[in-house]
Image 1 (cartoon, rainbow, N blue to C red):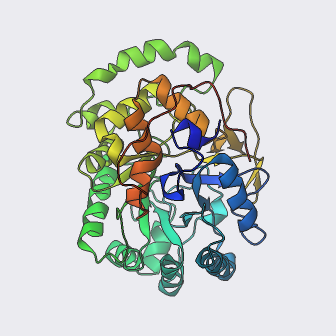
Image 2 (cartoon, rainbow, N blue to C red):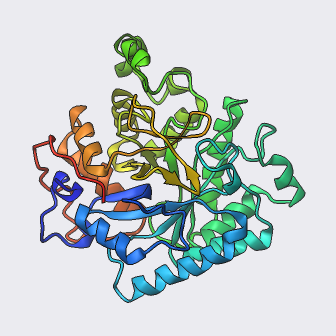
Length: 388
């Protein structure tokens, strides 16, 4: 079953009704970050087979900025000619990350003002968002000293992004001072809503909630040993008692700040439903608190053992891809499988439609073809989409 079928779309549905893979790293044997050789036409065909729109998410080495500019302009030209109807935009993970996490360390760097203007100007040609850490200026940030040396500041960085229609995507936090990082989430969102916006849809999005941020909970159970304690641990969290008001205490200040801003409609938050990045029960409760109309299902998917120029491996304990040092680099489950996982948590058809289509179309300024809202959902959740 394709993701389109799993979400209730039909074979005659217009492109604007298709589910959206908001944040994905590779289909088939294609590493999106190898954009010098990325065949966009082939990628569009893969998306068509799976019945999805995609926002391929790339890593960028500093010495490849000019090559990336040429790639985005090539994307724009093909899109203008109507040849890439399934690729809704291009996204970046980095380079302004306080903690590189599963991102290749060489793709975390501080642009000069001129480089940042070159990079963000691509928003007028197809770049829709770039992951930025709200706490990049904190003492624990990997980039703090370099940022200060370049005399960069958040008001200028965010104004420049939004002025070209590039959304900041919040993610990759440090863990040294959760209260400060949470405050910086709110400050960044405030800046975004005060700045001039040369785009459509929502101004701020996120990387996936609960990953690469300080937490008060165990958010995932990725090994056989961890899964033995999973039921008791989840019961101890008393998920039904979680509220936006007590979230800073229960889950931690940073995810609490993100969930509050999402529930207020000021950001569109991404969350993963592979059951491996985040436990499914925790993910479902977060969706309830934020509202599915403010949340997007994000796969973080890579189909091959290579990403951003680095070799990946799997452990046999789960379907995640790991880089050297046992750090999670990406997931492997396609959208249709994650839709089935969301159904397993008793999320209704209308809510799932928002997670995989409605919120993303509004967020990125895509039009829903008939404007009528949720489509009927196919009841079966047994089938999965095969990798392209």
